[in-house]
Length: 239
Image 1: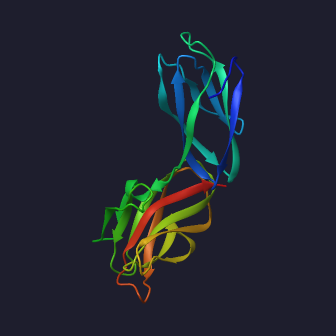
Image 2 (image 1 turned 45 degrees about the vertical axis):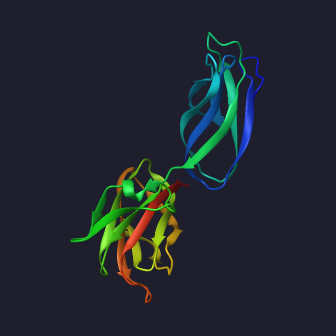
């Protein structure tokens, strides 16, 4: 609870962001009869619209305050500043329960998908995936592929991460973006099933818009029982 009593009063929380990337910002507000209206800023930049914490009673309410891109990890300053109050409010106090930062991933199960001829893909549910599901490409030979259409909102240079599904039936893939190889081949074979994040080199997009991310089977580990591929998410972090 913040004992504010005038416009301009504020409270600042220091949050450690463990990894650069795009995050959804959610705040759980304490709402009550004596609360004010606040504006959140992160690192000095306003985030979302002003929020009125007034309520004729007491309780809690979650407020979604949009997305923010952190280009670096580390401590970030979240400032909640009083900008006014509801005409029915008794004061300018503020109250907060928690701040939630959820990574915004490009979930492969949600992306437009194309497969090599005669091949299919399936969304599988598992507790280990980022949102409970991953996309599995049912491939069976070298040269087979799965391709995801990714909308890049802004031109620029990005660090690329892919969350691979690893298992005993997986192949080795080469990623291309719009026909250009990205990084080294990746072996998704593992004796046990799980997930592993692969970091690729930076990629530069000269324009925004749809880009084709193609994962092509080029081989299989000698211990693998197949050529299938699996992907949980693609993550593009603006440099």
